Structures are given as C-alpha cells and as structure tokens.
Image (tube, rainbow, N blue to C red; front, side, top):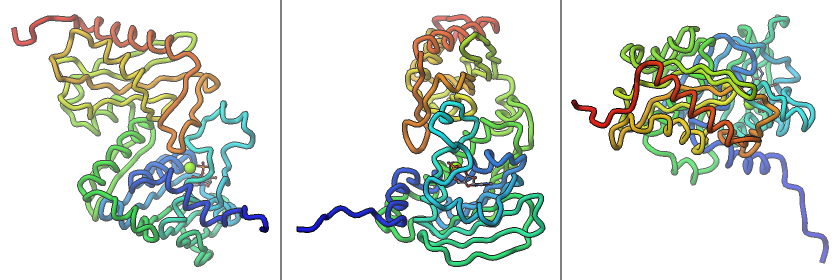
Length: 339
Ligand code: ADP
Ligand code: MG
C-alpha cells in the first residue's frame, strides 16, 4: 500500500481552526474589535443584524492596510504582531495568532475595505468560504471596515446550534462591554438592526463604567489602587449594599484583556467576606497590570485563559488591596444588614 498521509488543503485547515476560534457571533465581534484596537483606532463602530447572525461589521479609524497586507491578512498564521516565539512574552497587542481573519473567512462571507493614511485609494476584498471572489481598488476613508455576513453558511450544524437572537445579542453585548471597559480611551458605538444601543465617548475609566451600567452606578464605586513591585491593581469595586444576585457586573482584566480566572476572582470575593448577604455577589471592574514576561496568554485560541508565574502572590495582593479600599470607605463587616 502507498503512503496515506496528506496535508490538508488550507480551506479545510482554516475551517478546523475556525471551530475553536468562532463559536458564535460574539466570537467574531471580539476578534474584530480587538483587531481594530491593535490597529490604533480611536473610534470603533460595531454594526449588527439579527444579533450578528446575518451581519457583524466593525468599522475603525485605525492604521489600515496596504493592498498586499489586505490580501495576506486572510492567510493562516499571517500576523504583523509577532515575529518570533519570544515575542509571545512581550505582547502589547490583543492578537498574535494570525488566525482570526482566516478562520472567519472560512465560515462566512467577508467583505474587507481598508486604506492607510498615506494611500490615496483603498482596497476591497470579498471572500466566501476561504475563496477570494474579488479584489478591487476603492474609495474608502482611512481605517478598516470588516463585514462578516451569513456566519456558518457552510456549516449547518453550527448554524443550527446558535441560540435565539435575544441570547446571542446578550453574548455580543457582554463581549462589547468587556472590550469597551478595557479601553475607556477609545470611543465605541454599537448598532443593532438599525438602532443605536450604545454610544460611548472617549473617557476615563469611571465614566466608562457609568456610561455602560447607568448613572446610578457612580455613587456605588469604590476606587482600588495598589502598586507593588510585581503588579498594579486599579479600578473599582461596588459598595457591598449594591451587590447583585447575579455575577453580571464582575469584570477582571489583565493588561487590559478580559480574562477568566476563577482563582483570582475568588481573591476578590474573599475580600468581601462578611460584607455580603447570602446569595449576593460583589460588582467589580478591576485591571491587573503585570509584566508580560510573567504571564502566558497562549493557553487557548480565544485567549480568555491565562497562566501566571506566581498566582499565590497575586491572590494575596489582590485580596488585600480590595479589602483595604473597602476599609478606607468605612465598609467593615456587619452581621445584620437590615438593622
Ligand atoms: P492577529 O490579530 O492575531 O495578527 P488576525 O487574523 O486577526 O490575526 O489579523 C491578521 C493581520 O491583519 C493582523 O496582524 C493585522 O496586521 C491585520 N489586520 C486585521 N484587522 C485589521 C484592522 N482592523 N486594521 C489594520 N490591520 C488589521
Ligand atoms: Mg486578531
């Protein structure tokens, strides 16, 4: 018998990678918003139809791409953000894997328009299921627009797996909030089926939290600031009396990236010990700044998990800094809240 191993064609490899990167419209939203941030945009617009199932479009005023780069951006492992494996530990960008656009283009209809400041004209590329349909010179403003239509058009099993528009829009909104909270210095807007759901001007962190969660939030925020040799903690926790029955206002960022860390979330919750009624959860909006060399973010393609060199120290500092902030606002444990 002859040899039987074959290299998979690119469009198949891309579709497999897409399975990990793109679960639902919210995953596309995350990847496109992060690309806009990495491009240095100061203003980012998110446009959706049917909770993103038929359209997710992100328009930014960032650096744009040359014609050659526009085409290359859809290749797998094509990235402008790292050059060597060592760069993984010096990351200052959201992206580095070079697979988001290739993955998305494998399972949707994608229309990219982009122009750099120094170019007179821009480039438009249309790709469907990894196949380039057209590439043209177009008049377009500086920056990039990526429109992703008909997600999972060629994977019925995935399309059928999507939840109702209400549920999918909630996932999209969560993702939008996470990115917008991590970057208060960038203006964001979000439109769904023609109506504007959020308009967030460039602001500071407190204003951004209030703009997203409502003006009543302002009085409940307790600032947390702590700088040590290994890390900087900054942001806000909610006063205990404003705690919620859900965990919907718990945001934990590391180097401005939303991450899920049950262990460190526990540290924050531990700081609230004795302050909350049973079944209530604290609100927090906290960012941890650490030396990129002490973390590994390349655990999973979605980059929401992270490995720390010294988790125990981070736990202790986080817990004590939140506790200290609560103490400064004269919030000490009491046994009976209603008295
Ligand atoms: P990664 O972000 O990991 O590099 P992507 O597939 O998301 O991989 O993007 C590939 C490349 O395309 C990026 O490295 C970047 O050079 C370019 N790119 C993508 N989106 C934009 C954008 N909105 N503006 C400018 N360049 C972009
Ligand atoms: Mg990217």
